[in-house]
Image 1: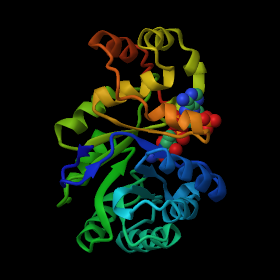
Image 2 (image 1 turned 90 degrees about the vertical axis):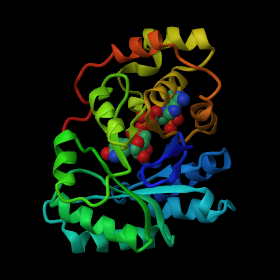
Image 3 (image 1 turned 180 degrees about the vertical axis):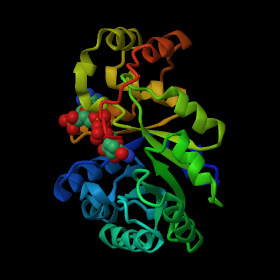
Length: 265
Ligand SMILES: NC(=O)c1ccc[n+]([C@@H]2O[C@H](COP(=O)([O-])OP(=O)(O)OC[C@H]3O[C@@H](n4cnc5c(N)ncnc54)[C@H](OP(=O)(O)O)[C@@H]3O)[C@@H](O)[C@H]2O)c1
């Protein structure tokens, strides 16, 4: 477990529910929970909050053993009031009394007012931790001009093609835990057959996916990976019995292109 700056404990690896159908999300999250994942990441915009909530409620696992994240999808007009009302809709779709972590999905709209609403949701016990996603240094600085609570988490794009190590370091130095989204780069650019990663994987008798997720953990990030396949769901969390050397971490760092795979973020 990793301790957040508000003392809440968050699991070291998470399951991503960006699956775009409630039924598929319910099935995948049920498999993830059955196989030991306890951090589940969803969002208003994925359209899977109901499926995720069903999977949690039918899992037989006590609610306080599951760490549930969702996110508000802000637009240019999002303000204090709409943040509260969008959160309440998410909570209803999730069929929960609270969420563990609520994130501003992107730095859109009046982020200072959105954050003030998030602080009040946390004060009222509807959200345990609050954080942000896709915030760069400038966005974080702007937020901190009025914030009373420092974000617990910044969820960012981070994978071997675009590691964002400078932003990761910036967050870590301020007590903000970075999470890596699309930790496996969605398999793009033939990542699972990349020769640098494959050589490291062979040396450790692990898969390329496991090497990438381990590289995240050793850089101080919580990786979020998605799979709808039970054996890959298991494979992705089996990363705590080996260690990458500093040299191997540096080799993966060197794969960075400095260019997002998802322009627009
Ligand atoms: N905050 C944000 O703006 C943001 C943006 C994007 C994503 N996210 C979060 O990050 C999570 C993960 O990102 P993602 O869903 O985009 O993609 P991802 O986890 O980077 O990659 C998923 C892809 O990799 C495959 N895969 C998974 N494990 C594998 C393995 N061990 N070997 C080979 N292939 C494997 C999956 O196929 P199978 O399903 O067939 O295994 C799927 O095609 C999302 O679900 C979401 O929660 C957040």
